[in-house]
Image 1 (cartoon, rainbow, N blue to C red):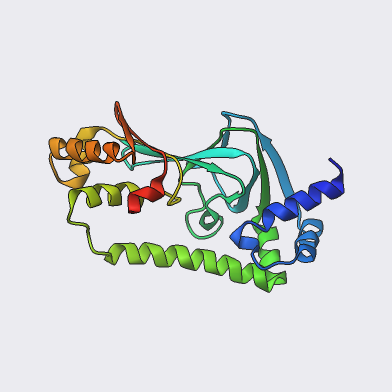
Image 2: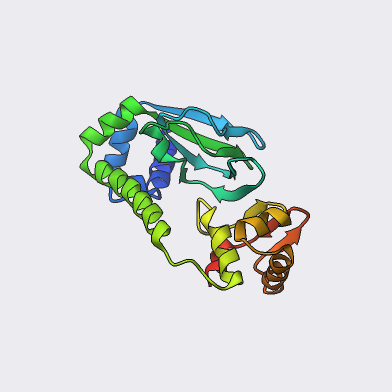
Length: 227
């Protein structure tokens, strides 16, 4: 692929990301020409970044499919989500007092990464009003959602409580997820009995919303849990 075709492909990919929404092809080409970007390839099964790694930059997956895994504070349960490019990787970790990834990202297929340093990111914010507004919108929306979640009414029905617990642990509200958790721990988190949890999971499985394995829940389409 020629350099021109490569640039066009990257421009097309960037336009799909909310951070570059509203920018013309000319603006995106100027960014690619002016901003120093680090490009990296990651093979299948290799980590893109691991929990605890320093961020301090804008990380983007611009090609391939990958997973993201998050762990409970005591590492007793975890959630793995299956995703595809293009995607931003925890953009909030580029700023603030906690500039380390809180999730592990791993390539499922060959992945192409595009990384912009904080210095270049600050310059980009200074040069582009659209980019600056998009960045503020992303960070503000994330903050607003987290605050609204605290004040949301708690579900009373066990089925809804279980669905809410699962959904609240997802970074992305749709797609394939694997929740690794012991039945006893799930019952503790929901303040109910193991039998009640088992019966509720059985009902969800009967509706095709998930499948139950040994210490794991396989959820093919998380968005359906909201219905």
